[in-house]
Amino acid sequence: MPEAQPLQHLLDQRSDLWRGRRRPQARCTGSGRAELDAWLPDGGWPCGRLVEILPACLGSGELDLLMPLLAEQTRQGQPVMLIAPPLVPCPQRLHRAGIALDRLVVVRAPDQALWAAEQSLKSGVCGSVLVWHPRGRVDARSIRRLQLAARESDAPAFVCYRRHQQPPPSLSALRLGLEPGPQLTLLRGDGPTRALHLGRANVIELAVRRRQSASAP
Image 1 (cartoon, rainbow, N blue to C red):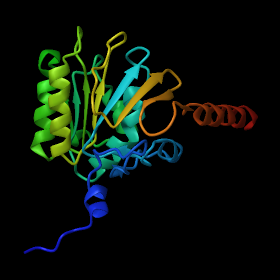
Image 2: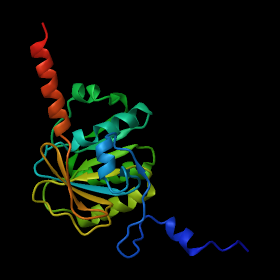
Image 3: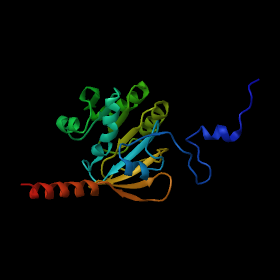
Image 4: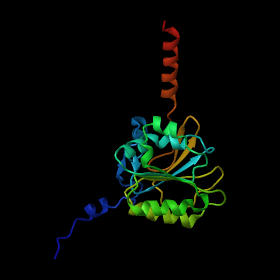
């Protein structure tokens, strides 16, 4: 008869169980940005869990937010999925960000977006999956299926909603508001609502470079 394991040990193995107000630490992967990792509840993007992104408008920086992660994963030979992006991703921009284009798969079929994301997660070979929800009412059943597929996968799964779309009640690990800048707001996760502005360092660095260029002989 196998030796009984302590209850605490069994509970610690379940990242989907909450005890009181404390959410258990989830396994995660680094975002590629130190300030973002320090801000995220688990110290990075949660693996095998769903992350919901609510941009103020499409193109607010949802792809730029994930580029360091996608670049690292493609360098390691992992395929990454961009499903139903509202705009055609610029390959030159992706290449400059360090993304290996031969490991990038873009699916342009909005009517099959959530199904394609589910199948990508179930395949077990993807590094990350980013899907933009199609227009219209949010399909709660499809989001739930996406959550279940994410649990079976080791990949971070991201769903990006359109403006005015209301996410369904879900078991997503994170729900983030996104405004141009980019500025993130933690809408769902461990801890109180809080914001993070990721653009300031880039703006300061650009200003310094411009001053240096202007003063150069």
